[in-house]
Amino acid sequence: MNSRIDLVAGQNCPLSTTGLHVSVSHGASPTGLTVDVSAFLLDAAGKVAGDEDFIFFNQPIRSDQGVELDIAQSRFTFHLDRCAPRIQKIALTLTISDGLSKGQSFSLLKNVKVLVKDFLTGFELAYFALDTSANKETALIVGELYRHRDKWKFRAVGQGFIGGLQPLAEFYGVDVGEGEAGAEAKPEPATPSANKINLSKVTLEKKGQSISLEKQPGGLGEISINLNWNATPVKSLGFLKPSSAGIDLDLACLWELNDGTIGGVQALGGHFGSLHQFPFIELDQDDRSGQSIGGETLRINGGRWQEFRRILIFTFIYEGVPNWSHVDAVVTIKSNNQPSIEVRLDSHRNDQFMCAIAMLENINNQLRITKLVDYFAGHQQLDQAYGWGLNYVKGSK
Image (cartoon, rainbow, N blue to C red; front, side, top):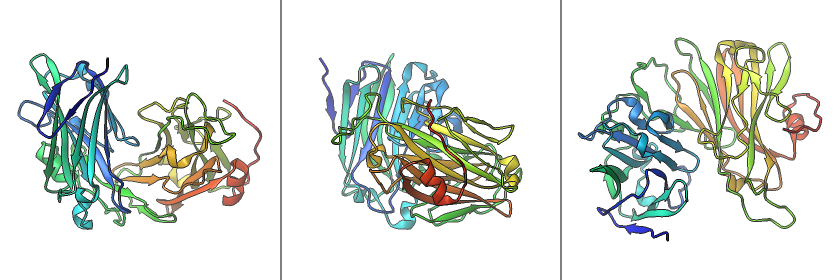
């Protein structure tokens, strides 16, 4: 019989399994407040052995140590039996992005909750609820997984930390090269050391907001566009019936070259593209289950960026109820030595199956990214809205 242990700050409990799902949630976020979840794999001295032991939005997977972060759902997957003996403790943390500069703190969130589940059965093992209404800090150590003899335990912590993600990372021994960047900040030209972690992230908050990435030595490199979402099925909405497999959300794009050539890359119809051959855009997978930690990713060959005029990033619900508010989708755009650019589908049209997320434009060989979040009934309507000119036939996968 499943028996969950409810903890208060300072308490601990043994874990009956090494395969875990650990979710970190919080109260409703006020407009303009962004919360990031992270983990630090620590040695006996409470420090990371290297920057790769820092799990966060720019580095969400450490497969060799059995740690993966699902950013969209703020959920960790742990296979603790894979952790090297040097890892004695794993600190779970929350930070408010640019909280100090915006005058924000955890008091605005009111509460934080940590739920530990058995990875295989889904049984709830431990739960920790923390009232943060009095917390004036912008960083919080919410809990710890730690070794005790030959077993693992979970400890509820709830300790505030002065400063945001950068000072917290430095406290644990991470070599930070680039600090946090706010939503309104324009990235400055920089050449951070390859041995240093980049904590920069820019969130495009408003529809129509743009950011231009500065030229960097070595060019743009590979440009990755990752889509992650909540695939859990929703209740039936009238005559619409949800798929028992959950929501199948597909990432795709339309592209246009400077010479007028146009096309698209998407799983529908098997148009996965190619990174190193024409059209120099490739879709890595079709995550039909929605359970892949990495979601779906489009990769653009930045070495050929001068040949592109524009790329329209969009997504559509191939199966499942068109409930965008439930999907909680987020797109993260990364390129060489640049901050992560985050676009959330934070406005919703639940009567439409397709969403135009962002436009990538070549402006004097630089990359400008604009948030769109416009909804359409299908491919033809999206194409007409942005003047692409492709012809469409019914497809399947």
